[in-house]
Amino acid sequence: MKSFQSLSNLATRHFQRGIASEARSLPSSPSTKYKTATHSSDTVEKLSDVTQATLAKGKEYLLPVYARPDFVLSRGKGSYVWDSEGRKYLDFSAGIAVNALGHADEGVAKVLADQASKLLHTSNVYHNEWAGRLAELLVTLTQKEGGLGYSAAGNTTSAGAKVFFSNSGTEANEGALKIARKVGKDRWAANASGRTWDSKDCTKTRIACFESSFHGRSMGALSVTSTSKYQIPFAPLLPGVDVGKVNDFERLDSLVGEDTCAVIVEPIQGEGGINAAQTEWLAALRKRCDEVGAVLIFDEIQCGLYRTGTLWAHSSLPVECHPDIVTVAKPLANGYPIGSVLLRDSVASTMTAGTHGTTFGGSPLACAVGYHVLSRLSERPFVGQIAETSAYLSGRLSQLPKWFPNTLQPEIRGRGLIMGLGFKDTKDPSRLMSLARERGVFVLTAGKDAIRLVPSLNVGKEEVDLAVDVIESCLGEMQ
Ligand SMILES: Cc1ncc(COP(=O)(O)O)c(C=O)c1O
Image 1 (cartoon, rainbow, N blue to C red):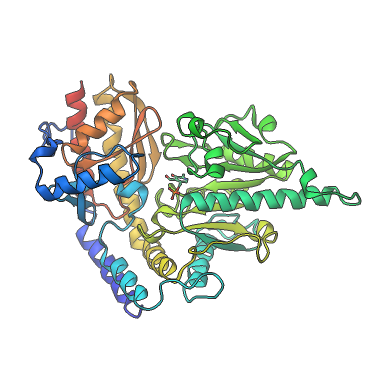
Image 2 (cartoon, rainbow, N blue to C red; image 1 turned 180 degrees about the horizontal axis):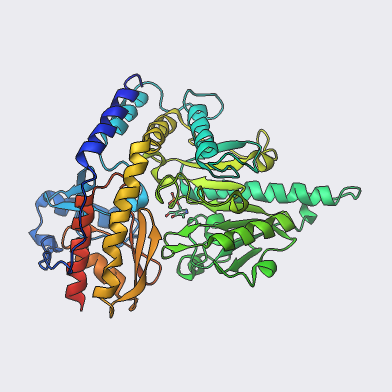
């Protein structure tokens, strides 16, 4: 890890030079440059024998829970990936908002290799050199840049924070829900003092979540993922879940009541369609949670860690809107699996030895990589570049609804580098995704009616131009 600083400086210089902030003016008409499908889904028979054999193995042995296109990704660099036939794609999905530093980053690869040959896993029975350092970095950045009750201006409603490491976003949310359940029991017991009580009698166990949310696929996380196509095949789910609507002020009081122990919400819904919660509504939600003693959880697994341009999507909001718990995962180790739960000391104090755990979470390898990635993401030039690139992306996307008024909804969605385009016809997002892929650009769908752009955070304006030129060409084809 000795060379971390020099690698990091090198990466920053490269970033500053390579993705220089040259002024670019917006085009005056939509691009038609990418009318032809250059990466069309060839019939499988035209692919090389090796590619055909790889696809056949996947089809025969992998559980078919994904409908994948017929090509095999074999390497990547920066914002680009190549398939086994040598075709190059611009990855404007970053492995679903994961590869913040792009593919095959040299700094990440070096930390992975160095740490893997030193100490990969120890279990949580023992301390390791990296878990505490990464936890400290997460907490101190939050204190400095705002979040979890701390404001960048220095005022705070928080007395300290702790971190629990998991292996994925789903597991981070499971941990957060379990912690909130236990806090609910403590609070219920405190109110029931003087009476003899049994934990089984506790009624403060209900959890509130929101329509179009996505929190993961395990039974607990799925129970608060309010999308019927994900839930129905696996019902019955966790009982005691109440579902509200983001930005609905009127039903907040009935949604969050005395029996509510937890409220879980994404400040910007990713999978559900790039839907942002309003600041005033988050403040009302926080106030209601305080009135009834419910734990407020922000799932920032997709929108956190500088994706919106600040450490957390809620960093720039007044502390009166901040949650008790933030869950994090996707980009924290740039693709190496890791998740984490950050929680204020006021709720952390309920968790004592033995109340929660994991075999792999917080391993020296995951945390060394996480430390390296978070250190680089938080560097000032990097954060400045996100602001500049995202402003340019936003400017280009803002032109599209007026050029394609019959296809697109009038408003573009999201902020920073989590942006979406809404469509009038719900069949169009997946059509656009396929057309763009056939022209060498990966985008994602979101919810029923949107496409989602979540590129690497070090993406350049050149890549923004390529992605939007391709999207425009596809929209032209779809007219
Ligand atoms: C907001 C949000 N929460 C939770 C998850 C689940 O994370 P994971 O797939 O790492 O378990 C996701 C994944 O897309 C997500 O976007």
